[in-house]
Image 1 (cartoon, rainbow, N blue to C red):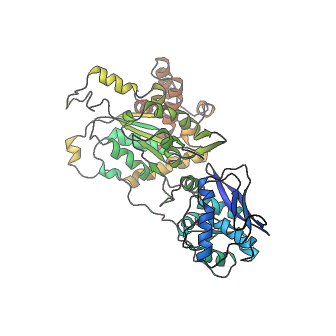
Image 2 (image 1 turned 45 degrees about the vertical axis):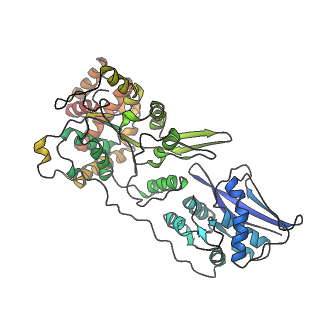
Image 3 (image 1 turned 90 degrees about the vertical axis):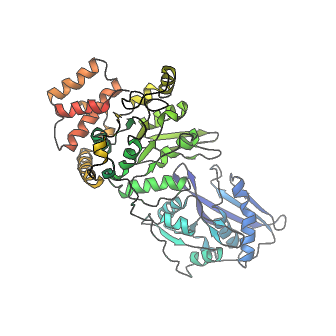
Length: 490
């Protein structure tokens, strides 16, 4: 006897349909074989499935059972195939009606028949919506999947409950939607002084520009960077779903879909943790989990140089490709990079208030950790000086929501043109409406060697963003001048 049901496999962040087929035939009594390129966790499913079936009141057939996960060329990993294997096996054995298999299912079975969550619930909902089938998921995965409006997601807690839901005998409660609000964002009103750095933050948010903050300890670099998500526009539904799929592929669920994500890996993180990878099927790294949001690298000079250089290509292309033997996957990585660094190991090089204790050799070795090509990819490079004491004891300054209003207007102007300023290609930059004085100012910086070819384009993008913030059609000379100041020196 034969039966099949449906599940999914994640290839990068893409969810692909998997047919879970079960055949009950002759051969060795009570033997269960799982084929279809399974990993160790999938092979171990047979023990979990047998125990869950027994405690749920079902009998394992007294014949050989073969379970195939098709297509066979696609690697299968994890414990999420327990539930679909159990459904297909029970239907093939005649224990339950074949109609129970007309679903898309995922979930790990405990030995007592209950269901544990599994990675990929959002992908299962996407596949189920595409196939027009009901989707059975454990509670946590069902909550994650509830963001797919066209999917019929059923939250189930046990094997018996999943069978009843698949047969339509019970109406499972709808999964609760994820939280939409986030109130733990830093507010710019808490940052005192630093007018240039705040202006740089506003321009970075409006145009999606990469930003490097350099200065001594305690100047407010980290606080400024953590204020950035609070002034960014909310994600639209399509972008929010993209980000949620990345997080789902990494085995994480987002608590607030509308806000851009911010990820801040520690400087001891490995290349695989930041870029993506791992053993077996690659999983997204921090740069992909920050997709459509902010990747914040605090203490940039402490990161391994080869890790920082590995960021260069993903920053340019907006995606990262991980190649492994037998598998090559691409993860989205359209991030805004924000970094903070000290000028030297002690942090006080060039500080007029506190002397530096580092030798020249120590300073040069520290600075060599940041390659020229990486520094050139920062559109904005700002020196953050110690805070003025009068500003520290003064009243609160402009809050984030006021800055966010100006940023939203600038973003709307860019969207009307068809793309964000950070994505403007050279042909778009050459066609910019720019005043003669602005053109001469930027071209003069290029001729005097203050800008590289890449820097020339990036300054023009910055100038366009500043003009958008001012509500100006053409890029004026003052916009170009401010862009050159924000570009700074490496």
